[in-house]
Length: 83
Image (cartoon, rainbow, N blue to C red; front, side):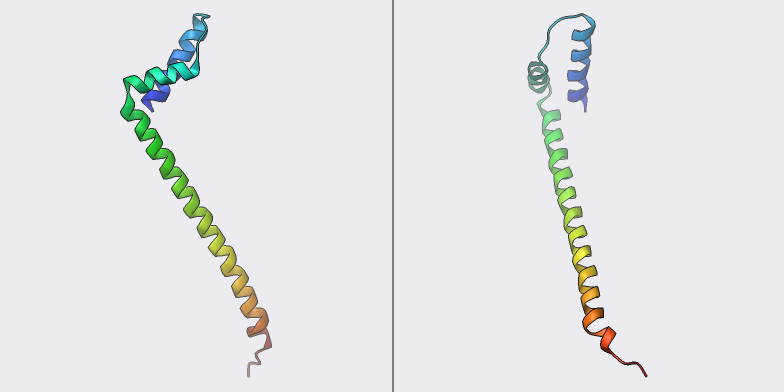
């Protein structure tokens, strides 16, 4: 987070001083000064993508389970005669 905050602070400073700036250049400078922080950001992004993919898979499995239960009920249980 510190790398992102540093870039944001530099952008605000440039706006306040009414000077031109490049977000890309500021990000490159922050990365050169704090390379580990950017690696951690990449790790968090990959963790987020993995978690998001897992939740999508779980949601898909739940939908398939609901359809399967509906199919079993329609084809099997609805035709059973209970005494």
